[in-house]
Image 1 (cartoon, rainbow, N blue to C red):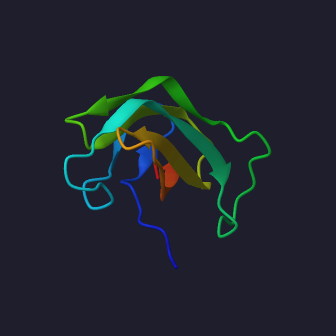
Image 2: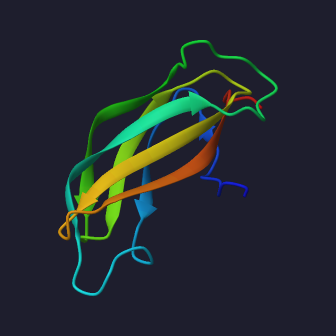
Length: 108
């Protein structure tokens, strides 16, 4: 199964990204807490980043009871990252979603 892709992020930008769990929630269920985000380098990336240097800026937060949002900063140009979000729900379930983010320099 291939992962969805977020918009390309420029190295100098700090951009907001969000996962929408509306289709995974049961009737009357909502997201709770702020969730956690993790970043790794995709096995599909042709550029390495041992860090990884793409980082979550601040604390993730819940938006409209169905979305978990966070800001991402830094990253190495040409690297394809996997961003994973894990959240809890009002029904004591744990949900997880992931997407790819490509980072590029301003001039590419």
